[in-house]
Amino acid sequence: MHREIYHRFRASQQEEPDIHTKLMRKYDDIPAWWFYSLTVLSMTVSLILCTVLKDQVQLPWWGLLFACGMAFVFTLPISIITATTEPLKFDGQTPGLNVITEYAMGLIMPGYPIANVCFKVYGYMSMSQAVAFLSDFKLGHYMKIPPRSMFIVQVIKPLNLLTL
Image (cartoon, rainbow, N blue to C red; front, side, top):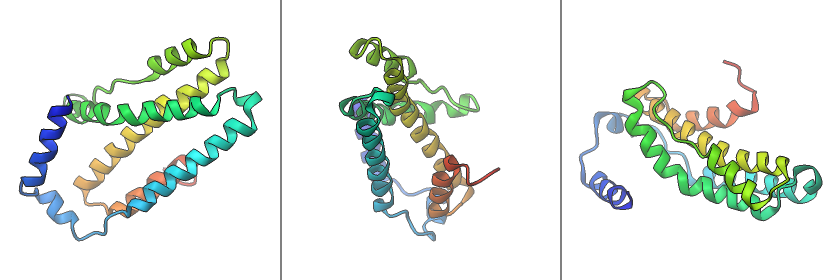
C-alpha cells in the first residue's frame, strides 16, 4: 500500500490541476501553524488531564501517546479507503479502530475500564474525527467554500457553539 500512496503522490505533483483546484486558488490556504497549534493545545490539555486526574481517568500518559500514535498511523490508509469507496455508498466503507483500540488497551491494562474507554476516545475517535474533517474539506473543495472558513467551522462545531 505504501508504494501505491507514493506513486499517486508523485503523479499528483505532475498532473494538470482540475477545474476545482484552479477555482480554489483564489482563496488563501490555511496556515500550517493553525493545525500545529490545535494539535499542541489538544495534546497538552489531554496530557494534563491524564496526569492531574490520573485516578479518575486511569489512562497513563504513555497510553495517551500510544493512542494518538495509532490514530496518526491509521488515518492515512483509512482515509484512502473511505475516499475511494465513497461513490459506492453515501458514507463510504470506513473501517474503524474501535475494536482494535479496545482490544489493545484491554491486553495492556486489564481491569481498568475507564482507561480502556479513554484509550478508545483518543485512538479511535480522534482518527474518526480526522477522517470526517478530511471528508468535509473534500466536500468544501467541490462546493468552493473558502478553506479558512471550513477550518473555523470544523473547529467550532464540536464545541457546540454552532447549531445547525
